[in-house]
Amino acid sequence: MRIGHGYDVHRFAENRELILGGVKIDYEYGLLGHSDADVLTHAVCDALLGAAALGDIGKHFPDSDPAYKGADSILLLQNVVGKLSEKGYTVQNIDATVIAQKPKLSAQIPAMCKRIATACGICVDCVNVKATTEEGLGFTGSMLGIAAHAVALID
Image (cartoon, rainbow, N blue to C red; front, top):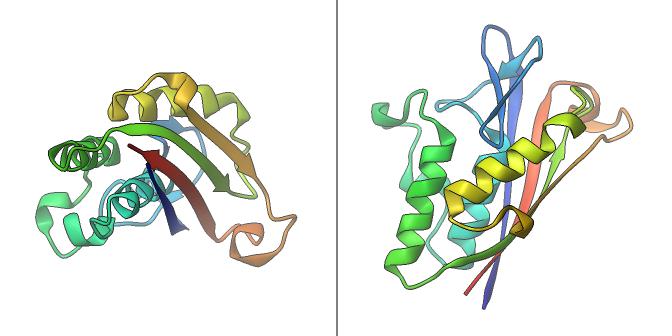
């Protein structure tokens, strides 16, 4: 068994959709990034890649490559799971935390867990997503963006 940790952050941007865990969130701002800027899914990708010692999301899907402009991060996650499978690894579980002052995310968490689980080929009971604020502190507390941490166990 191997464990990996992932972290990602994106700043808020106007005229972008907010996508977290593959789920479109109704909010006035989206996140700035080369792909769909799904900070949660990016953290999960990095956790899985880290567990397998395969580098990080930037190594596999560089923002300098126009092929990934506006890319659906759930498809990137499926690609990561394929890379793990090629090395003989399977995903066992994922635990992730989204850090955002706003929007409130509790109603969308079950859908996020389902999208991530489906992309990883695991049951939804093996994915946990939490959301927290930073009580008005830091860049997320100042509502400048959203961050996410993820831990993954592979076998």
